[in-house]
Length: 291
Image (cartoon, rainbow, N blue to C red; front, side, top):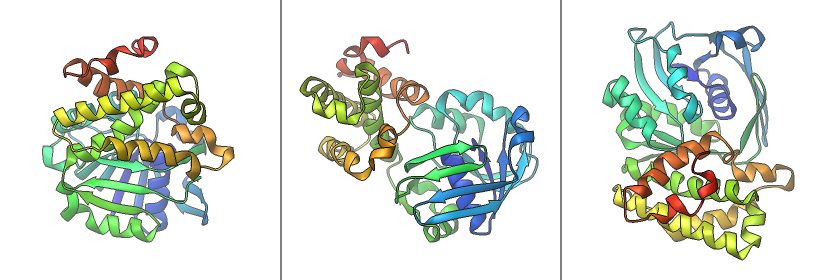
């Protein structure tokens, strides 16, 4: 199968390397100013070992692909789509891996609704240099909307061979909100307190604010039609520190909070709170409202 990766960072590079290593044809779309310094292969360092695989480089999508993976940051999405010509080559399926909710509506307004198959990914990974990604966790959990199962089951099977956990979920909103209701409160709390997870959980006041924000994010998700579990999210946050080795404590923040994910989190969760019966999520962190 043929794939294109838009956003060759920690997540896009990981996906691209895994697929290319499994024998799929992968094109990495890069900015024109980055083309000369980007290597023509992806290197992925994993707990199980290092893999290297050749890829094709381009600045715009110029050939038909079976899957376009979008892994840019939320604030980069609109300009990044300039690499996808409006009347360009055929794209069978589009899989966005962004955090938040708004990107799904944007992409479905630009492309055919059924071609966009939202997904979420949970992994600790970091781009060390162009074309070089390190996966620090032993897990990679990919959740895909069940609307794309018939089109993506073969791809999911190959990613499982590459060590991914892949599942298709029937409730798309639950899938997206389950991650956002975890990320948004943590991102906002981390930014407002200037503490990592260890510091937040060690401070009763900030821990209380975090738990309050998780509860309100879940309430907003429920109002939007998702089924999320507050206690399960809190348990995940509790266990996160034990999953990470000391050298990657900042990865416990999922490289989340300080910039782009906070924007995605706030636009989805905080603005959702403003329109719901849960105003506290929008108000209790005034320092971050204009970030």
